Image (cartoon, rainbow, N blue to C red):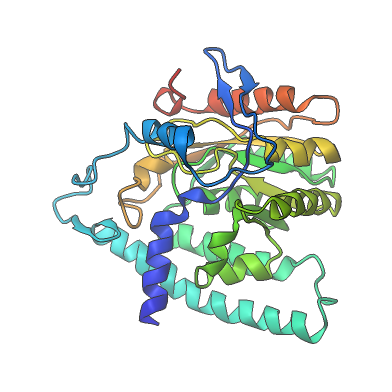
Length: 335
């Protein structure tokens, strides 16, 4: 159990690389997008060379590792990041809620094995129980974000179509934020394969039928693209963070183009989400959030963008422009 708790804590620090897509596109002064990748890979490889330099430049304005950054006089530094009384409460709540979550996921796993995956083919139950975990965690810690323009989703869901939800990413809080925004519906995350090794979370990802990609394997990248397309065809929503990694300074990073391939080839609409203030509640150098998200974090829902009449480049430009439009100046990309 001790090793599991340490692993979970380590995940909360490293979950920044939740999603992976290639073909970075960059924003111009007006949020215009132009693909700059010459790689034939659908998803990014490990950082090296110039990509490593880009990563270093992106972290140049990140919070200093030796500063509590406003966590209060009771904050202190640990191997995994800063903590204060609220962060400890949040972490304990997260882990305690994770125990029954693990039990029900195991029960689902047994049922799938007994029935040879004929029971609950769309893997609704693991998503439902994972959603309960995220919902209760946010409510019990007063971290439920304000959701602006919820009527956009209410109207869209009446059409009974699957959509690709695309959001910016600068805190691991973004994952439950997107979950409660989509609501009590069947949705799948696009995540890197490494997260499958994280206790509880890894079980939720593998059993729940989420789309995982091994960024070092070309075959895995192609299979991921096909699985994502099939998921949308099956009427299941997909959620993605096309920056491919968490922004350490809060500013929007270049996007990767894998997400647009999935949506455009299927003709599924993309719904942009602007997540505001998540990095303020949970800075990159903190193990858990340093304060509740109440009053500082919100998710802005934008109108769906149809993909069947646009090129991938046009789709990328419109989606990125919509997300930027909902972000405050301190989260806008540096030109």
